[in-house]
Length: 261
Image (cartoon, rainbow, N blue to C red; front, side):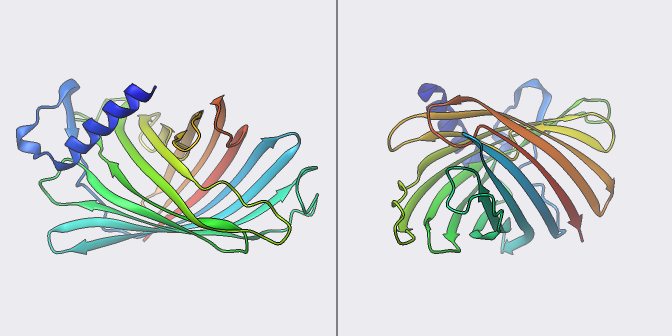
């Protein structure tokens, strides 16, 4: 698994910096990394996660995408804010289900017209008296078939991100959490179920490797999206861990409402 990750990082780094005219793509794929919408997108997300031992967490999230252009560099800025409610026998507020501010997150990525991918980074800030700051770089690229009219395969859009935690916050009487040292891998695949409906794998939930103490978290993640019209899309998804030597969650279900304007 480590060897595979290493080669994925090398290949993705090459894709980001390579000139498209000098790179031949197999399987009839076309690089679409620099194709991006000029629209703004506002999304409302809801997550229900099972942590194990009858402990659960519910998350409400607001996510916003905005085009970001600086000269020849074209990219996207994404802002997330979330509220979290934990409940269960091992939680401090048992059975209250009260939502409290959780984190704010800013992600920026983009590239030049000749790039074969995108480079960027993410910053996460805690919004309450416990948690930690985290930041790190990311690389991504995206491909689709050259003929899309009758092709069930939509796209292959791998993303790699590394997060480094710092400045932990701890509530009085609580244990200081371990700092994040995490490699995130999104081997995202999309398939067309109909003209307006897709199923997407590893689009929302990543494969994680704990670079501090070792351990993998590997989920099966799938999300079905349906576009009602050019301005509205909704989705439902679920993830289930299959390898968890790095503790994250047991299973998760989620949904979103997406508005384009």
